[in-house]
Amino acid sequence: MNIILIGFMGSGKSSTARFISRNYSFRFVDSDRIIEKKLKMSVREIFENFGENFFRSIERNIISSNLSFCSDCVIATGGGLPCHFNNIELLKKIGWVFYLKLSFKDIVNRVKNKKNRPLLDDIETARSLFDKRTSCYENAHFIIDASRNTEEIARDIIFKISS
Image 1: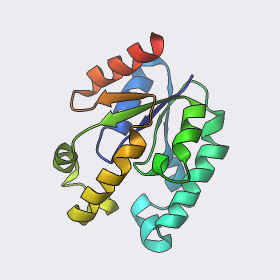
Image 2: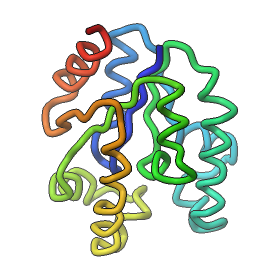
Image 3: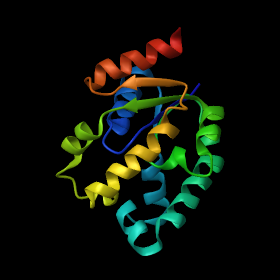
Image 4: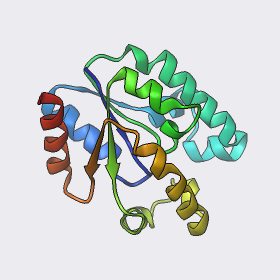
């Protein structure tokens, strides 16, 4: 059984996935890191050199070819991954999908000093993107309050899949 974490950038997907991996015997997978490793470029460089459409097509390929073969993985997705090409439905076939829900204000506070967030360069565009993606994220199997600490979030996720 796989656990798939979705949500906007800065919602804690990667840190929660790492925590679950270390403490609950799941293999950690980060879709953005797979892409970076495959292309030998950062997400920002991929966006700058090839554009978002190229990046989204690579994401789709990663889900259908790599992630569908995961077993007992905890997968941290890129923020936009579930909202393109109807990927949310594919993710739901691969495992239990959890939306780590956090307010836009909290997200901005978490990531405002990080340089690797190309979509937050323009705050108004980011806000619009956040609003658009929220309805997609809400199609997850479960919605988790991500304003808590990582351990509490992880315990909540493990409890839900164990019930």
